[in-house]
Image (cartoon, rainbow, N blue to C red):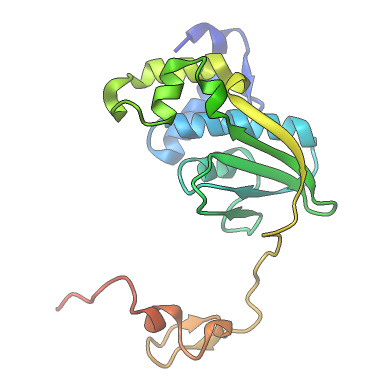
Length: 198
């Protein structure tokens, strides 16, 4: 990675590059290329929509939601971000009042000009075939050159679900949202764990 970029005052999401990489490492466990590209995407979308209070829609479960949670106020916990399991590396930030916003995506056609990014993104090589330092350097070199951006109006996935009532499940004895039915989803679907014997 080019150390000169942070020494020259180069910023991403309003922070020096080294700080961005440090925050990603602290949150995600390592400076994941997908989260670094996500930071570039967030930076471009924020520039496009300005300083409005925005909501977000993310079209993949992988890496990109972490970039939004790190570099915007949008989190799963506060309900300002919806995550769709569409496996498209794209995000939209939009004004929650007007619904006007910006969609940014990693453009496979544009990554061809950056073979390391292209091969990594399209999984044409094993994960460890490109050294992390090399890949991060190429991502920070390319930045927006591998992305595309469009103005959009959000039309769906806008509702922020809120619990209106709380019930106690007869099966588990735990609190749940009764809109799902007479018992909690864990009891309804069988749960995701079994109890260890004492």
